[in-house]
Image (cartoon, rainbow, N blue to C red):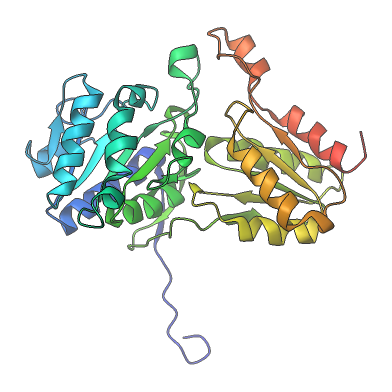
Length: 337
């Protein structure tokens, strides 16, 4: 009892990112018989990254469906199924392969509600890993968050930790519009605390992962690790960084970023994607429009260098954003470098 009210403490346990995703899908499939999973190797092989491990045994081949290597085909099947009242989860082995299916994602899923005059909602999730995953070279290491975020009719979610992944995926599955849900091969083994009790996280709500006063650092997805490590490094020099995890890039929670910048007066954005027309470009524009008078320095952003990602690990390290580049950017906005 606390203050005359019963306080319920959530039972927390530490689980992997892949387990959080699996729990979200399993719980929603138990809750709603219209939810099903379809994609390459999701059933018999238990998922390319073991996200769907055990789901075939529980739900059977009618709801956990292996597909051929034909992304355009099974994405289209998913759109048709959604038009007929089901809630498909379409897994791409990587969002690099979603380019084969992009016509169905952009010209069918994203536009159907508008083009049908509201007659057809498309309640479906396209999910899978995005960005680099180590030594996979140029064709398997690209970021498409800003591509999909550019399209009206889609929501785009990029979680950074197991807790957010589960809560956001459950919300995405219940959404009546198509959601692009982007993960990372490099995050599936990450562990974090997740409650046993059911919870949902609204799409479009950023999270302040670390409070600070001197500079705002914004990121999302796996590069939140770089953002938080940068803040730790800066703290050693008594620089207080506020770190914001966007969690979704369509919609973007601009208000949280604006309020932070009004407090810190400086902004650095860390993003894995190439610099041209990136999410960081959009945030920069919005902050300069809505918080210009609060800025004490130009906004800095750290993106991958503007080249296809190579295979060699030394070159990968040189191209991707890192703590060293991020610390340097913060010191530049603080006039300390």
